[in-house]
Length: 380
Image (tube, rainbow, N blue to C red):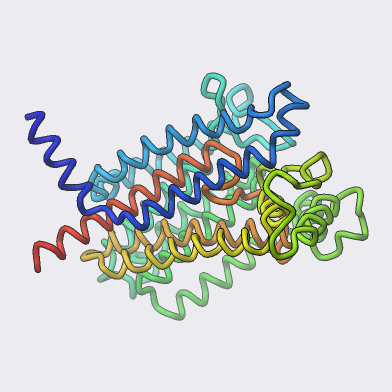
């Protein structure tokens, strides 16, 4: 039995897309390097060691590798069967994190649940769970897509509840990201154009209303348009991000040579790590990061096209574009093109929840790819 199990695992690993796997690990290792570089000063001042944040992220990274390997070996069709359970778990997690004494509050946001000495952010897992649910629902309702109430609307009601619960933390960035990622699946599912137009209008109006209905969110949204009007307040982060990016030039000032990370740029190892990358490694570093993300995106699209069934195709699309939309949100915020949302840069920013969920998600993508390759080989 043991020998048969080993043979099965070897057979599955033989069909893994190793260029994609290498790109994922390369980006994650690059992120580890930049987390150490961008956080060593803060780490020393806060914990009397330069490696505090690096060591914690390394622990999450190793755990993420384990989860990614598991995801690569477990048939992704299992998630199709578990989608109703994942919906209930999503709603439960988002409700529990709001309860006093359970949810952990930091920087005026209650987004985390303490697991021993570690913090877990439920909204990161919920993004993946909702992608699985949407891929499952719309792959089963291909014959009912012409009927809005029966074939399109049901998961949108669930998504609305998830959006509102995430907003209560408050976390408009994660709420909007979940909305856009699931919207990508809806677009690719074959829903009628008039329904898409209506849903897009409602979605944009809804996000805009909630964005501008809160003074806190309104300040975050408007500060990116005129940061120099309040250089020591709402515009402080973005201005220092501008300085870091401007200082980098083409080749940067050298790894570890960032000045802005020395207390000038808040969240240098999390939300604004890209600014430090550009300051230290220049445009070359920026192009490297974007190039790897584009490679992963193209691979994800290719995997979706090769998939033999609707669930695999929509799941691959959802996982791929959830990550790419997150990249756009983060880079747009750090460069002043978009409002600052607090969304981490996938595989690079400091943060255990984001890292392990991203690695597990990409493990699922690799598993879909392996099944595609095995099927194509058998046909050949």
